[in-house]
Image 1 (cartoon, rainbow, N blue to C red):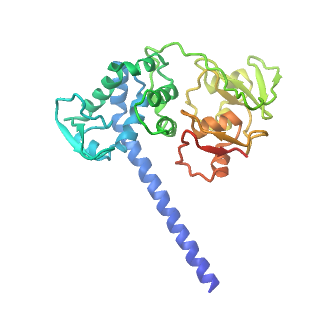
Image 2: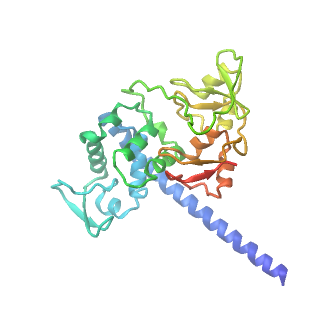
Image 3: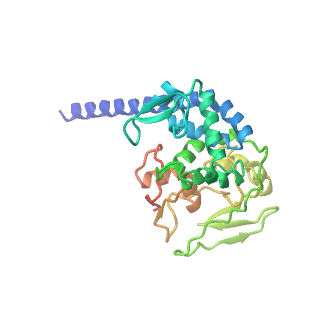
Length: 313
């Protein structure tokens, strides 16, 4: 009897696992199809208005449910823009309130164009256009700060999408602003871990949490860092759990060895801030992403919300 129960339980778990995998694959396929369809349009609007293509695509994916929302299907409205002073066609849809008025477009490109003009022409988004065109994290945090959305996880959701689907590859350096110097984060409450300086051929190598690392510089790549630290680029990519074309920014920590399975003392937990991802948090404390998910019993589709407390050890 016990054997039969165990067999049934095992079959049930296999069915659940298969269903979850199929759902994940379908979601990924739908998102990838949307990216393939609209990435060219996002790049076009970047050239016209100076908004990172990665941000436009991520917002389109998020706001339209990868083109599957009622507004996207019935009104070509991919960004949930409401009527306000709109004099064109409209559609009424229940969102935060019952039967709200949303703009209706003949083609998706009109929606993308309207979204770009919406950001470009409103003064409270002006500061965003001073950012580096490749600073998608700054743009994501800025959009939330400027009130584009009330969702406390809005910036982190955009960053999750951009990094999961590597949307940053669509961002161009054309018209690039000088990247601001990003100083490594420090905590006023907790003592910084001790750092040991090691002699390097062309780079200053330091150690933190017992792991050697360097700070990225402007226009840095894993290949360049590997050459200047006598390491291999494929190892750096693996140690930092990032794609080879990941856009490093000045001040980013790049580990030269494998990260730990838990953070060192006295780092027991972390309060999530706006614009953080599981990857950025893992880099901050030198902990492997897989371990960070496991310690907090989170699935890979989890998006850290501002104010969440994550265990580090």
